[in-house]
Image (cartoon, rainbow, N blue to C red; front, side):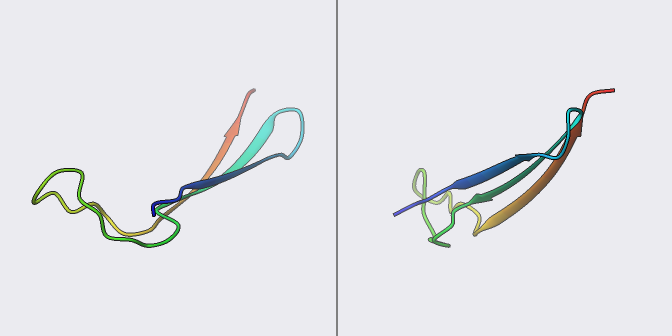
Length: 50
């Protein structure tokens, strides 16, 4: 089983904070033979409008 998760939060009118996890279960998988996909991946993103 392969799970991805994301969480976002508005800090104020101009700033947003997002946290994403790809492959939450840390499962090795292949999209096609010989193409092993990466392990768990964490991303933190801050975006804003000025």
